[in-house]
Image 1 (tube, one colour):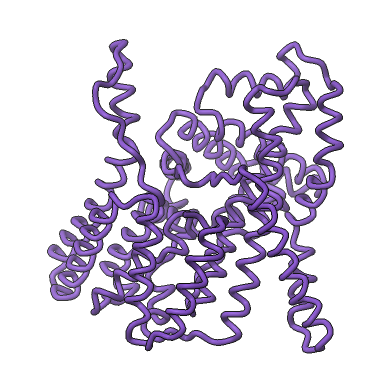
Image 2 (cartoon, rainbow, N blue to C red):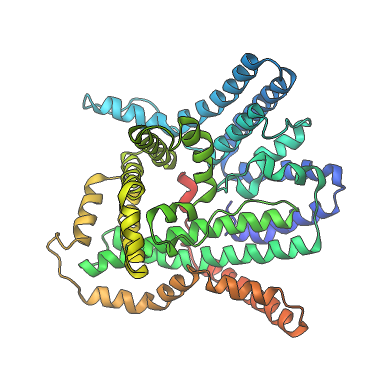
Length: 467
């Protein structure tokens, strides 16, 4: 079950909202736990015992850290046990197939072991739990005293499959208080519909074009290669940011608060700025739990470069067990290193348009690396973009695609900027009755449009399932 499914929109969510609102405050966490298990069991019931085991382990280790607060050695041991438990699950489910496949591949053999199915959201869930253990050890968050509160945190269905990565300190007070108000519910519902529209009306539509071009079903030209990767750039942004918006909206509807995960990354004028705006919670996680503990930018230039390479190699591998993800991570590590030590100074002297084009060019090349697990297909696509594949500069199919998807491309480009959000925020702050009524009608129409699309279409992929 995903947020952009009719089952979720018209059965699961309405039923849960009614039960949650009617439940007394002391039972709301229990309602969320049961709902989260039902949501997850819809497609991944086999992983629930593992989630329960890790939740118990994390909770006990945190309690023991609290008990031995004056014994640094014991606190470190309990923290390492909790971190090791979560990392073991992540490594086993996500990387065993990759490691065994490459190991047997060295000898020209196929792996004799059964393929391990990747549980939905295992990367997000593991990183969230690791952050809790480390934060309790550091003393930056308190140890949760009630197990069902902690279980509600680790299993929260709004963010379990695609983030954002929610740290315990962010929702600690909400889990105790359940400050569900009419205003938070209204804002949450509007945010959810915004995310649903991003996913269904934009990401799904441009994704159809990308699937045709990447799948080789279209007659390609250089223009087609660029049109295709532009479609994918919009698809992955509106798919992922749309799901983040829906998660943040759902949290608001249940009286919770999640951190923002995107800040219009395609408006960035450097790769450094881009990664401050894209998947913000993941970047903050690697900064706080890997980059800074390694030394950050302190010390020698060589040590700083090493830290960047380690962080970005891990960032790449976090996205998937495949060589292309490692290459993608190292690709951005090299660009960020170059920007840190000389490129940013040059870029600041360049016109803003040039800086923006420079950033988008490198990002789109990065999306080619990110998408193609087959390195030969990746190479061929990059060569096609460069005009080195022996295909024409343009053809009738390329113009047809541009005409067919031109409007959606323009809308996607516009909604990738903060202008519409600024207008929307201004409109939603007004107290004029006719404006409020028109705004409500607009949201109803958008939701109806999304529903009509879902009823009529069979194309509704979710890109971050595999992460």
